[in-house]
Image (cartoon, rainbow, N blue to C red; front, side, top):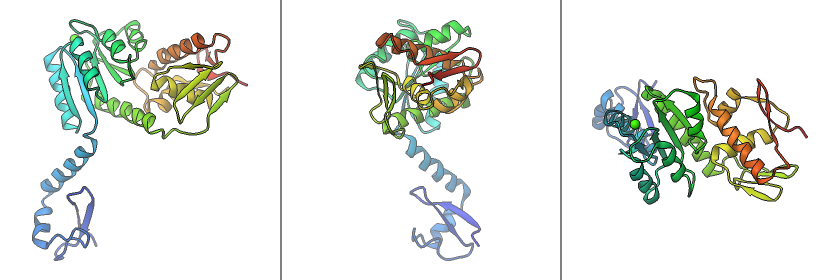
Length: 285
Ligand code: CA
């Protein structure tokens, strides 16, 4: 009967019997070492170390001019196993993203030199970088303006560190899914529109449409089920992987931008419909 479990150096867990001279056949650790390994603090330390090293690939750039917030966010990110750098103004953030693009940017809206909206617009020019916007403003107009320039999500100050980490992980998971092509499948063809999940390409009436990863995922989700109405919560849950406290209002601005891009590329076909008071649906065929 296993009475305890210990983490071995490679993060795997071995079980052993109390009093048994050998901890496990695979690790080959002698009894004297196993005694040490039973120390719960040592075990915990190894577990944390293993999970941290697994996530350390994600680098987060925090752009925030308020030193206390910047430091609190940086410290929490590091404790969660991320690599984190802090910059205090917009031009520095733009320069950094050009030289060494991070996996995600936590971007304050009000910054000296260049505000968060402009930073977001500029850093997205070459390739999409996931952006989580921080805003002290609460009115909806500012939030929507934020998404019009390509931010994936936002948090209104004051926010909890737990919520921040939760959203960052969700955004990174989605970005990973986009890169890995896990979503790959058949090309979805609906009239003049073609959505290719493997290549992450969209064409309408023969014209290619450049979408952000979120816009692409929204279109793919809707186009796979023509006529099915997705309310905001369901769409946010499917695409973002969670639903926020506002009940998915963030969805509206992304859908608006997606529709505008599709209409610009092909004014004859506007496939994403608003179902007033309910949500969104791809046109029925
Ligand atoms: Ca600020």
